[in-house]
Image (cartoon, rainbow, N blue to C red; front, side, top):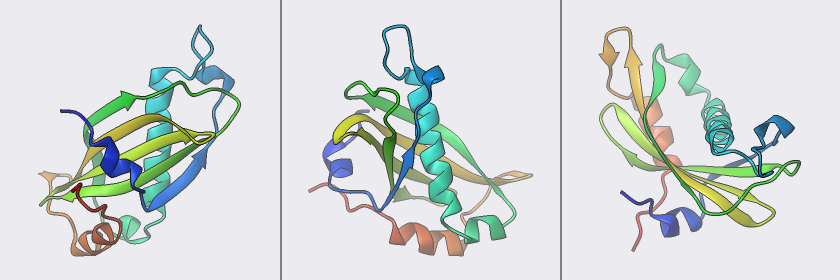
Amino acid sequence: MRIDRSRLERGLPFGCQVATRYSDLDVIGHVNNVAVAMIFQEGRNRFFRSFEHIRAVRCDIVVASLNIEFASDLFHPDPVEVSVGVLEIGRSSFRLGQVATQNGRVGAYAEVVQVARDGNGPMALPESWRVWLETVKVAASL
Protein backbone atom coordinates (compact mmCIF):
# COMPACT_ATOMS: atom_id res chain seq x y z
CA MET A 1 0.00 0.00 0.00
CA ARG A 2 1.36 3.39 -1.01
CA ILE A 3 1.84 6.15 1.52
CA ASP A 4 -0.57 9.08 1.16
CA ARG A 5 2.16 11.66 0.58
CA SER A 6 -0.28 14.56 0.12
CA ARG A 7 -1.67 13.97 3.63
CA LEU A 8 1.82 14.06 5.14
CA GLU A 9 2.86 17.10 3.10
CA ARG A 10 0.03 19.21 4.56
CA GLY A 11 2.02 19.42 7.78
CA LEU A 12 2.74 17.21 10.75
CA PRO A 13 2.47 18.60 14.29
CA PHE A 14 5.87 17.54 15.66
CA GLY A 15 9.30 18.21 14.21
CA CYS A 16 12.94 17.88 15.18
CA GLN A 17 16.37 18.01 13.56
CA VAL A 18 18.41 14.82 13.38
CA ALA A 19 22.11 15.02 12.53
CA THR A 20 23.54 12.93 9.74
CA ARG A 21 26.83 11.11 10.28
CA TYR A 22 29.66 10.31 7.93
CA SER A 23 29.07 6.64 8.74
CA ASP A 24 25.51 6.98 7.32
CA LEU A 25 26.88 7.31 3.79
CA ASP A 26 26.90 4.55 1.20
CA VAL A 27 29.44 4.06 -1.58
CA ILE A 28 27.82 6.61 -3.89
CA GLY A 29 27.86 9.34 -1.21
CA HIS A 30 24.28 9.67 -0.07
CA VAL A 31 22.65 8.69 3.22
CA ASN A 32 22.05 4.92 3.10
CA ASN A 33 18.48 3.56 3.21
CA VAL A 34 19.18 1.80 6.53
CA ALA A 35 20.42 5.09 7.99
CA VAL A 36 17.18 6.77 6.84
CA ALA A 37 15.25 4.20 8.90
CA MET A 38 17.42 5.09 11.90
CA ILE A 39 16.81 8.81 11.33
CA PHE A 40 13.05 8.14 11.34
CA GLN A 41 13.46 6.08 14.53
CA GLU A 42 15.27 8.96 16.24
CA GLY A 43 12.45 11.31 15.21
CA ARG A 44 9.85 8.93 16.69
CA ASN A 45 11.82 8.59 19.92
CA ARG A 46 11.95 12.38 20.33
CA PHE A 47 8.22 12.56 19.52
CA PHE A 48 7.47 10.07 22.32
CA ARG A 49 9.82 11.79 24.78
CA SER A 50 7.85 15.01 24.25
CA PHE A 51 4.90 13.30 25.95
CA GLU A 52 5.48 12.78 29.68
CA HIS A 53 2.55 10.34 30.15
CA ILE A 54 4.32 7.75 27.97
CA ARG A 55 6.84 7.18 30.76
CA ALA A 56 4.16 7.13 33.49
CA VAL A 57 2.43 3.97 32.22
CA ARG A 58 4.15 0.58 32.57
CA CYS A 59 4.17 -0.82 29.05
CA ASP A 60 6.28 -0.81 25.92
CA ILE A 61 5.67 0.63 22.48
CA VAL A 62 6.96 -1.63 19.71
CA VAL A 63 7.06 -1.32 15.94
CA ALA A 64 4.67 -3.75 14.24
CA SER A 65 5.06 -2.40 10.71
CA LEU A 66 7.35 0.07 8.94
CA ASN A 67 6.92 1.35 5.39
CA ILE A 68 9.42 3.82 3.90
CA GLU A 69 9.19 5.44 0.48
CA PHE A 70 12.26 7.27 -0.77
CA ALA A 71 11.73 10.51 -2.68
CA SER A 72 15.22 11.97 -3.13
CA ASP A 73 18.75 11.69 -1.80
CA LEU A 74 19.82 12.91 1.63
CA PHE A 75 23.42 13.98 2.20
CA HIS A 76 25.94 14.43 5.00
CA PRO A 77 26.76 16.78 6.78
CA ASP A 78 23.43 18.63 6.65
CA PRO A 79 20.85 17.69 9.31
CA VAL A 80 17.48 16.16 8.45
CA GLU A 81 14.19 17.63 9.68
CA VAL A 82 11.90 14.79 10.78
CA SER A 83 8.20 15.56 11.14
CA VAL A 84 5.77 13.20 12.91
CA GLY A 85 2.00 12.97 13.27
CA VAL A 86 -0.67 10.42 14.13
CA LEU A 87 -2.73 9.03 11.24
CA GLU A 88 -4.94 6.43 13.01
CA ILE A 89 -5.64 5.30 16.55
CA GLY A 90 -6.82 1.76 17.22
CA ARG A 91 -7.50 -0.28 20.36
CA SER A 92 -3.89 -1.29 21.09
CA SER A 93 -2.05 0.39 18.24
CA PHE A 94 -1.65 3.63 16.34
CA ARG A 95 -0.22 4.56 12.96
CA LEU A 96 2.26 7.40 12.60
CA GLY A 97 3.20 9.35 9.49
CA GLN A 98 6.68 10.79 9.09
CA VAL A 99 8.49 12.99 6.59
CA ALA A 100 12.25 13.52 6.35
CA THR A 101 13.31 16.76 4.65
CA GLN A 102 16.70 18.29 4.07
CA ASN A 103 17.29 21.82 2.83
CA GLY A 104 13.60 22.16 1.92
CA ARG A 105 13.51 18.94 -0.15
CA VAL A 106 11.63 15.80 0.88
CA GLY A 107 13.97 12.82 1.11
CA ALA A 108 11.61 10.13 2.41
CA TYR A 109 8.16 9.35 3.78
CA ALA A 110 7.31 6.73 6.38
CA GLU A 111 4.29 5.11 7.99
CA VAL A 112 4.80 3.15 11.19
CA VAL A 113 2.35 1.03 13.17
CA GLN A 114 3.20 1.08 16.87
CA VAL A 115 1.66 -1.37 19.35
CA ALA A 116 1.37 -0.92 23.12
CA ARG A 117 2.19 -4.06 25.07
CA ASP A 118 2.96 -5.29 28.55
CA GLY A 119 4.44 -8.59 29.72
CA ASN A 120 1.36 -10.47 28.48
CA GLY A 121 1.31 -9.08 24.93
CA PRO A 122 -0.68 -6.29 23.25
CA MET A 123 -2.70 -4.13 25.61
CA ALA A 124 -5.33 -1.45 25.19
CA LEU A 125 -3.86 2.02 24.78
CA PRO A 126 -4.01 3.91 28.09
CA GLU A 127 -6.64 6.67 28.06
CA SER A 128 -4.00 9.35 28.72
CA TRP A 129 -2.21 8.23 25.53
CA ARG A 130 -5.44 8.35 23.51
CA VAL A 131 -6.10 11.92 24.62
CA TRP A 132 -2.58 12.99 23.64
CA LEU A 133 -2.57 11.04 20.36
CA GLU A 134 -5.79 12.81 19.35
CA THR A 135 -4.07 16.20 19.82
CA VAL A 136 -1.35 15.28 17.30
CA LYS A 137 -3.61 13.54 14.79
CA VAL A 138 -3.44 14.60 11.15
CA ALA A 139 -6.68 15.18 9.26
CA ALA A 140 -7.52 12.55 6.64
CA SER A 141 -7.02 13.43 2.98
CA LEU A 142 -9.88 14.97 1.11
